[in-house]
Amino acid sequence: MIWCLSKIKEDEVDIFTVETMDGMTFAIPFENGKETLGSRLISCSLVFESMLRNPMQEHYHKRAKLFDVECQTFMNFLYHLQRTDLKVESLLHLRDLYVMADKFCVDKLMRMCAYAMRPYFNFQNVGDFEYLAHRLADKYLLELVDSYKAQNMEADASTRPYDEEENVIDSGNAEAQETERESNFDFYQ
Image (cartoon, rainbow, N blue to C red):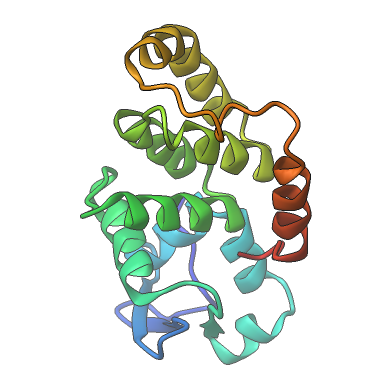
């Protein structure tokens, strides 16, 4: 389905401007009756569709400020809209794109990012991925984590040197760390 911002006359282009948290702006074009980057943006994200179809500030001003999305993350998002695949340079960029996909309800991209994060799993960081999956209520990423743990944890534990401090069952550190996580938790992060 091809969407447009407003009633655009034939051969006219309408622009929706997106500004990232670091001040970079992107002009997203809409053209009547044609598939554009703008129509792809709206068709893949219920959040952007709501912003632009309902009487919201973004609809009237044809502008959105993404206070928690960096320029690189939005560029990776636009790349995905144009090519339907991923182009990320690091795990951090991949994670940021995954979180953005969650915020803007781009389920296909979120799933692609989760799958692309799988090769980065290791004994030291699998808990971080598990925490992220729980935080975003992503069953697919959680399944990937569980699958990794089932396949690798026994082998990883047997090859890793034993560390007494790390293996203390009741050190009280886990509770303190969880309290710290909760106090630093930002729902929109």
